Length: 68
Image (tube, rainbow, N blue to C red; front, side, top):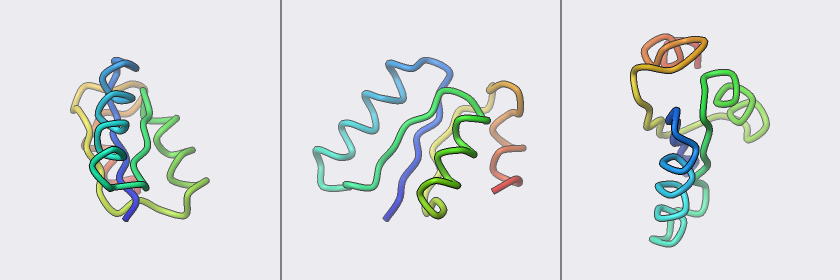
C-alpha cells in the first residue's frame, strides 16, 4: 500500500512517513507541497492513501485530492 503524507512542514511530513514505515507500512512517502505530491504519485505509480493538510501551496489539499 502506497501512503503519501503531505504537510507544509517538511519535518512533520517526513516524521510521520518515517513512523508509518517503522510500523510496517513500507510504501509511505512524504511531500511538502502539492507539486511535490503529484511528482511523488507519478513516480510511484499512484497513491492508495493520501494524508494531507488543507492549506497547501500552490494547490490546497482538496484540489490535490481531486487532481489525483
